[in-house]
Image (cartoon, rainbow, N blue to C red):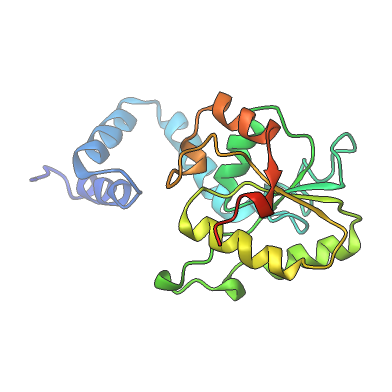
Length: 205
């Protein structure tokens, strides 16, 4: 692809580094921005820059936040005794969109995957265990994608919680095995939350 401007090519290269954005799509985006008011483009670039420098991660659940404690953890109407364990922040957004969960979250930052070099020590499992001992949590709801890696992670954490008073559940199998939680439709995800089951009846042995 030949470009009449080095500045245009540089902008296209920058956009094409984003996931799912090819060079043709990147070109369309750049040409679209060139048609906009300079003030709008400046506001767009400043919003991206501020997101990178100013967004924080909640010191309790590791969700994205504008402050040290996210809006969910600081909301007095949310139940502090139920914590939903998810893989990533996109899963928090997916579950929140169902409006069927009124507890709090814990973002692991991934799932155990030895083939990818991801072990328990790379995840935020230790902080989850600390929260269980200090926050009066009574139920852990696992909402991990139904994959081998997700099941392995659930099984590992369940073993760490052996002997505790906790009720340990997981979302129901309304989501197909091998699917990604963030791509599930809201109705399926909502029903999976409502019909959650004990982990012992779910995790593959």
